[in-house]
Image 1 (tube, rainbow, N blue to C red):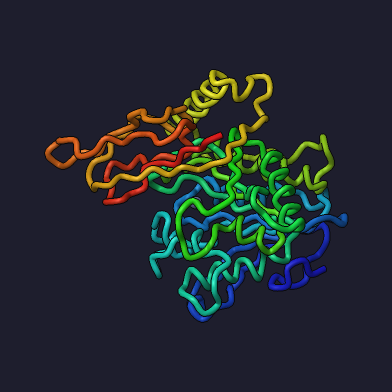
Image 2: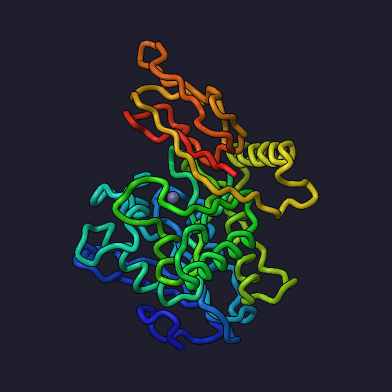
Length: 367
Ligand SMILES: [Zn+2]
């Protein structure tokens, strides 16, 4: 069977490792990218999963690696294709958000351009050589090196879509997002930042492929809890798509990561977020899998460069007009008070103190 032409023939019932050179003039000298195919013995959908569109989102990368080691091809229907790192130049150089070759954020130029810059050729290859051959697509992310977040899934909203095919793709994407099982699902109808192109999930949806982007973990660390959330989320979506029998236990997500302080911190943060969600009546402790659906993503920026002192944490519920942090100069004087423009929940937060002019500070999800 040839689920994905660039991978060649796949043998049902096996997990295969591939080293793939992506097409594109700008990518000619790239090292080949690792791709794992897990071809089930029974017929079923093709699910494509990647991480590393952003190079410093390590729990997402580890989740894809772990899926390749733990999914049992003899127990699944259909085929799972896994790419741990798309943006290898950023991964190798520990560059957050951007690709260091063209200084472009790849997640703002989907579906790419075969005659464009490095990132545009790379995203074009991802869409055309992988995503469009799949029946469903999951792009795994997290906070990048200077960024902390509360786990959430993004997909495209049905709102404002003109034709019924596009609405159907959006509805199936929403079902996948809810099945993934993170605390928040954010449904957006337009890009959150003006950009040349789209984000991965939106571009895939435009091509007719139901797709989601899931985020967990951050701050440049390997957080076991985030890895497990992402592994389990993909398995949940596979169950939703009928690739794993309902009720069948998935392979345990075996950790090779020793306990660490950061892990304890992320656990206590997640607990805090869960308590807040319970306190605001958005989730019940008894039904931890139910996601709160948010419909607007408000990003907050500083006008001035300086030292950033946030007064909030990921998962915090904030009110319109509330002071949520300050930016100071290098003498210790306050340059700017940062005020929340909405009522909502902090989904991601820049935790690195050095911020640039018009620098991104946080994203707030609004119901
Ligand atoms: Zn990312």
